[in-house]
Length: 124
Image 1 (cartoon, rainbow, N blue to C red):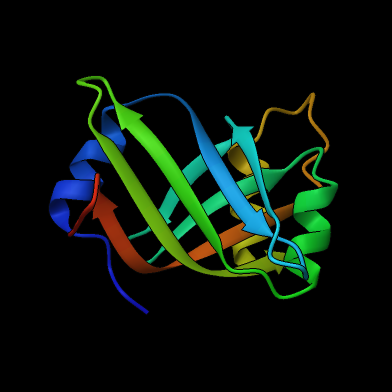
Image 2 (image 1 turned 45 degrees about the horizontal axis):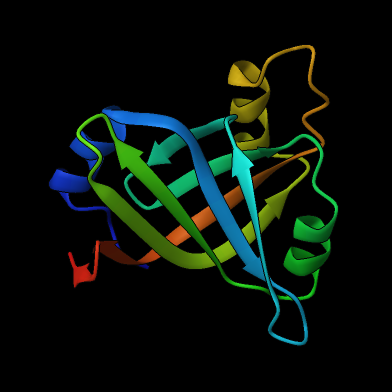
């Protein structure tokens, strides 16, 4: 597992709009969604709330890795790739329930474990 470089952690604080979270199915077909309920849990983990996942959840259960794409307020792009964990209990889940809006179901906390980081085409 890798750690987000300080440059990316600073960029995360300046992100604008939703992130794009991508998984793939068992045939290698990608599925990309916008997600707004997301946080930097620690330098190795980004957590997305599963509020209404369907294809994404199926892909995760079938062993998909994932990627997160975000833009900063200066329109600089960053992509984070890694393995995925699905938490319905435990500390990551409990943390997600604290920041996920109460009006949303928060079925689970999806933890993307950082393995690779890019800014545009450049590996960071």
